[in-house]
Image 1 (cartoon, rainbow, N blue to C red):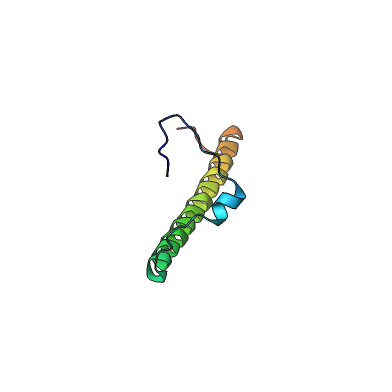
Image 2: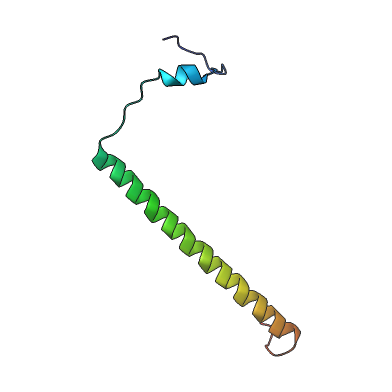
Length: 73
């Protein structure tokens, strides 16, 4: 296999990819990867929901401040 110098690009075509040998990790390692991915996705969804709730709460508070129902601190 030829080495490429920094800055050079390689072009891979579908035919080349079909002959490319890629090692597949054992099922146990694949499961660890999947579990971690699921954990992170779940955490991200939780953070998104938390951010939405904070935004909704902030909007309501600002509206109450504008209406004079809540003191501006």
